[in-house]
Length: 296
Image (cartoon, rainbow, N blue to C red; front, side, top):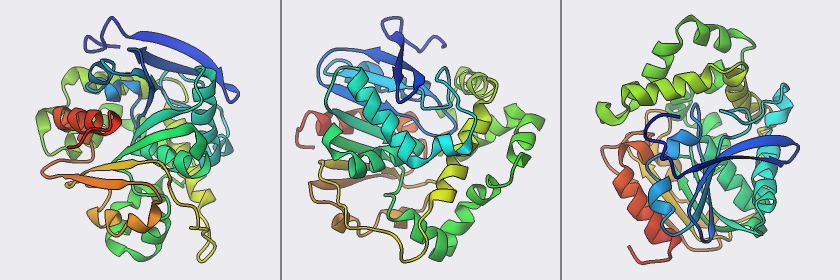
C-alpha cells in the first residue's frame, strides 16, 4: 500500500450486503466511517486516519468495486440505494448501531443518501466537495455552467468507450485527474499516483468506477418527480474546496432548508476538489472539532 500506509493500521475483510469488503482500520472509540471518492480507494484518507484514530475507531473501506473490495459485474449493482445499504450493513457487521460518516466526492454522495435514507445509522455527517443529492439533478438540467463541468458524466454513459480510452494511456489519465485538477501541484507524489494507478488497473476496477455514474444517471428522478420532503436530521458539516474544477460553488448555496439538524459550511479558498489531500491539516482540524463536538 506504500510507505505512508502506517504499519499500525490493520487491513481487514468483512462480508456485508452480499459482498466482501476490504477496509483499513485504526484506533478505538466511537466508530468513524471514511468513504472515498472517484477514482480512489481507502488510500485517499492516509492523512486523516492517524489523526482521527487518536480519538475514534476509524474504518476506511474500499467502496464496492474499488481496491480489494468485491466487484459485481452489473451496472444495477452500483445503484445509489445499494451503495447506501453497503454502509448500513458495514456498520452493523462491525458490531455498531450507528457511526459518524465522512465522505468525499462519490463517498460524499453515499454519505448524503445514507443520512437521508438510513438516518438511524448516522451520528454525525461530514461531506467534502459533494453536492446534496437534491441539488445535483436540477443543476444537470438548468445550470449550464455545471453542465459544462459535468461533461464527463454524460461521456461515461457511453458503453465501452470510457474504458477503452482509459486503457490507451492509464498513467496520463491518473496524472490529469489528480495533479491536473489541484491548486497545489505538489499535493500528489509520484508514489501517490502509482498507488491510484495500481488500484485502478485491477481487473474490472475502472469499469466498476464508471458504473457508479451509469447507475446514478439511470436512477435520476424525472423533472417534478423528486421527493424533497426528507430532511437530514444528523448534525452536518460540509467542507468545500472553492477551486473545484468539477463542481461549482453555487451548488452549496441556500442549503439550510434541506436540514432539520445543525448545518455548517466551511469553504476552503485556493483549494481544489481534492480538499482532504490538498489541505490535510485544515481538514483534520475541522473534522476533529466537528466530530468531537467542539466549537471551531
